[in-house]
Amino acid sequence: MVQITRFLSVLSVAAVGLALSLKRDVAKVESDIATISTQVTTLDNAIEAYPTSGGTLVAALGIHTDATNLVTTLNGATTDATANGALDETDARTILNSVEALEPTILDALTDIVVKKPAFAALPIGGIPALILQDLKNLKTATVAFAGALISAAPADLTAEATQLQNNITAAFDPAIAAYSS
Image (cartoon, rainbow, N blue to C red):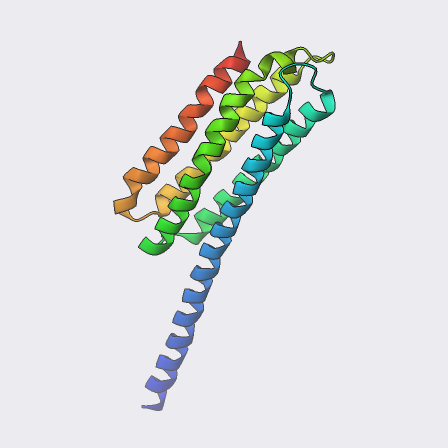
């Protein structure tokens, strides 16, 4: 009887530890999304602030730095989401809503970067459009990976909605990539 009691006690402690670990991992993913949100807004603001003519190399390189920082954060968030494993309904819905809230800012940044291409091309030092093209490709790759990690962890009833969101966001990269490829 004492052995069974000890076994149940150990099992209970292990179950609580596992539950706390999963909640911590979900909290980490949610924290990653909050950081992504901040960085997407920073990038969008930098792109919006860049003038359609007369921009500086420093400001253009600042946009590149913002994009690079976002790629790094997305890659880390992908690792965290993958490590988390399957999400329950409540956590998955919270995460999906947080990512959906990012969509308008992402779409705005991608639209604005296309409008600003002539200003980047007019800089006295060449190569900025090629740098932005590489940033766009890296951002798309990192976004697809992060969305894929979240979709694979989502409950089946949220997969279609999450996949549609991923498709909307990643498709928005295509016109920007095309604009900087020509």
